[in-house]
Image 1 (cartoon, rainbow, N blue to C red):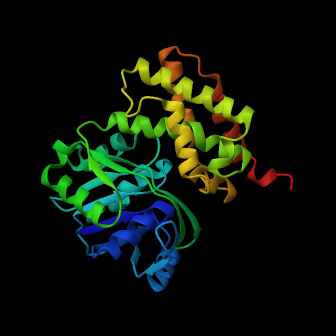
Image 2 (image 1 turned 120 degrees about the horizontal axis):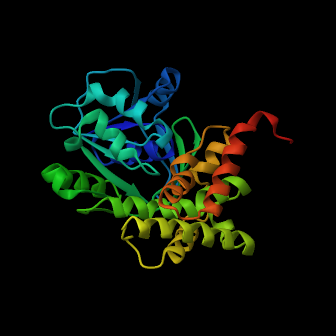
Length: 307
C-alpha cells in the first residue's frame, strides 16, 4: 500500500517508520523544507517498546508526484485545515483520508477539504515522544480503531490489514463518534494536568489532589457526553483513564511536549472543547474551564517564565 503521512511529529514518525518497515511505500509530508531534507537523509530512528531501529523514509515539503492509497493525518488538531489543504493535491480518485488526531472537529474539517465520502475517523492509543527531527521514543502500545467501516468499504479493510501487518493492533467499527469521545475523555483526564505539572503520564495518578482533579475533569466530560447521547466504548471512564496512565506511565504527553518546546497546544480541542460544549448545553464545567485557562496562560507566557 502507498501512504502519505502528514505531520513529522511523534505519531507521524511512528506510523511512517512501522509502515515502511512492513514493506509499504511511505512518504512523509512536512511544511519545513530543511527538516524534510534532514529526515530524508537520516531516516527515522525509533527506540522503546517496539525495539530500536532506523528506517529510511522519504520526507518532502510541497507538491510531489505521489498518489497514495491513504493519507494519514497526524498533524496537531490546531493545524488540521492546513494539513488537509497541503495534502489535497496528492489525493487521487480512490484515495482515502484518515485522521488519528486528538480532540473534536478534525473529521468535519477534513470533510470540507476532501469531501465526506473520502474521510475516515480514527483513534490510536499508541504513545510516542519526539526526541528530535525523525527521532522518537515509542513509549506505549495500544489499539488503533478506524471507521465508519461502511464508508471505507474494501479500502477500510485494506487499511486495517496494512496497519495490523505493521504491528498496530487495529480494528474497524461502524460508529466513530463514540471512539473519538472515548479518546477525548482520556485526554481530558491526562494531558492538561501533565502539561501544568510538567510530569510524565504515570505521575499524575499517584498524587492525591491531582487524581481528584482528574476525576472531576472526567466527570464533567462524561456529563457532556451523556447530554449529547454519546455512548462511550468503555464502562468506567475514570478507571479507563487510570489504566491509560499506567500503560503509558513513561510517556510525555503530546501537550506537555508542546509546552516544553514552547509551542501552541491542543488545549482548545480537548478541555476547551468540553468547556465550550458544556456552556452550550448549560452544564457547569469549572474544572475543564480552569485547566483550559491554565494551559492557555502557560502558552501566552512562554517568554515571561521565571527560571
